[in-house]
Amino acid sequence: MVKCLRSVGNACLLLLFLASLPCLFGCGGRSSASQDKTLKPVADNPADAKGSKGTAKQFTATRTLLDGTWLSSHLGAATKRNPAVEKGASFRWPVDGSISESNPSATGNDYSTYEPNDPIFGEYHTGIDICPAAGCLAGQPAYASADGVVQSVFAVSDPAQTLCDGSPASSLSDNGNSNLGNAVIIAHANGKFTVYGHLDCAWPGISAGVQVSRGERIGNVGHSCFHYRQCQFMPHVHFEVKDRGVLGDPTGKGYSGYTPDLPDGYGYHDPRIYLFPFSAKSISPIALKIVASPNLPVRTGPDTSYAFLTSVASGQESVAFATSESWYQIYLPNVSGPTSGWVQGGSGRASPDLGATQIEVTGAGGSGLLIHPSPGADAKSVHWDQTFLNCGAAVKIWDGQRFVTFASQNGWYQLFLPVNYSLSSSGDCEEPTEPGPSVGWSSGASLNVLPHTARLGGR
Image (tube, rainbow, N blue to C red; front, side, top):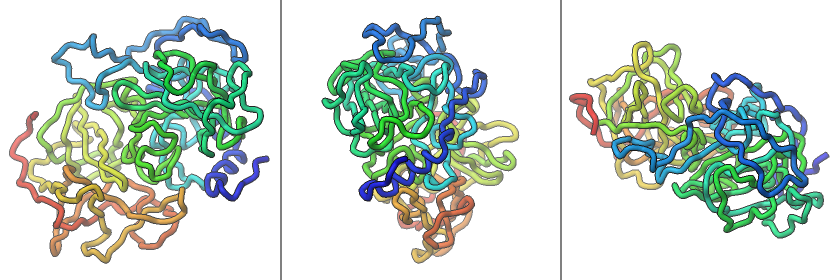
């Protein structure tokens, strides 16, 4: 039984919740490769050149190579790459075989999935919880997703903690009471960082400053958290791609594993964007009218296999600024920073509206522009924050973003809002029980009303 220390605070409540539900991250493995990109075979099962002492049995079966890697030197100069994948490198999943989410019935396993249950209530998952094809078993190999340099290796303070070969782990940094437990952080040439959390142990020789190759073993799958090597949830790897090499959120706001709004606004990214890059083309911003009923999913990339972010309702309008085949990239509000997502266009989904009036955020600066439930500075929306058990600024839009406005009053402009479960217009600081409002108002002092779009076209 895990005891809560006073210094742990709300984080320990999370641990106790996980301990009470040992199958939350259960060992279920979805075997169908058609579900999403977390479930398809991956490239390379590198032989373990460092030996297997103290580790799980190695896999030797040949796997099918998935064409989801990206080598910039092999792409033609005319190819428009995914702008997020700069200085391209080949990425792979950090475990063996046909990848499975750690439990298909759990609500919080994929990137940006919303967790409705206490004590995580109202927050969004910052990574993907995955297991190898062999199942969610401690001791399975965990690999570097791409070439890079190890920035940090963390070990829990559990007296039973060792390296994977049984030698002492005392040389590694303490995990600072992180919910990710034993973790490795790797810096990559594209400026991004990958994080591998809940490991059972770090592999011998994996330490800060060491160069690692794609597919090189960095540790074992496990279920460590806080100060403990074995917590009461099924073993898996919590896999993140982010903008800074830190255990918590890249913005330094104090979140780890979950954020109160979509994690993209806090410097996290869906790993699929890097494992399965895509081509995109910038376009002159155009308004899109949503005709899908009852709503249209918004995803991290232009395909149904990328992570679900939110949804926009039928009749709403958004502004798109890039395309990829039949998909449009649209601006999204976020309490922490500017974000965007992809919606599928076409008949029965979304179509351009050249008569819509666009507004562009200007002059809001690094603080962003607040959205209010009604026109007037006294009208407040609240944004529930389960990590700190309080309410903060509701939701914001950011400089350079564009939205469709359909009403104005006394210098305020009304705009559509996507589904957001942590936004409430009641003004009460309490856990929301349903999605927040579908429209909001922003002050025209930091908005530029734009003329109607005259035509479609690329930049």
